[in-house]
Length: 175
Image: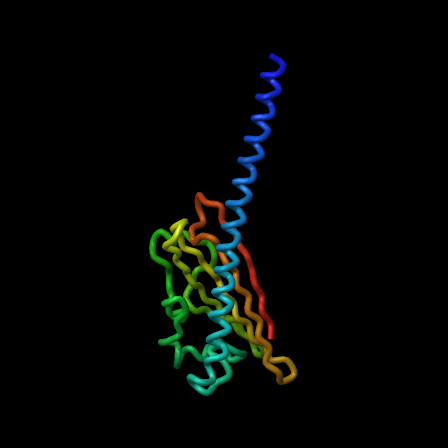
């Protein structure tokens, strides 16, 4: 009876350890999806920030202190991941419940700085089948005549906000 109880206790301990390791590995893989979504948002912003002068001769496609983004003239082809980041708009169902700040191109500005915000959805048709999201803020500030840029990209492992474990990972680039 003693040996049987001891074997059962060891078995339960091994089972508990195994379940915890599986949960930990699942969280780690979902964390990777969130960081990849954030990286996609940063790369999109960097690409369009560097490409804009070739398109329209201005310093950036993103808003500076004027409060208007230069995407108004060249935004029709401003695509990342096959999505126009300027006219993205409200997501389709079931992503409409997203609380990640899903919005079209939004600009907030004052006399020396502006922030442009846009959202990307990154579909994954592999395993697991889910859509990742990134909310990207591109801030531009003029300090002593020099234009500084900060890109903050928040990546999410899912676009849904209800009933799932939602992870957020953030990347920031400044130059």
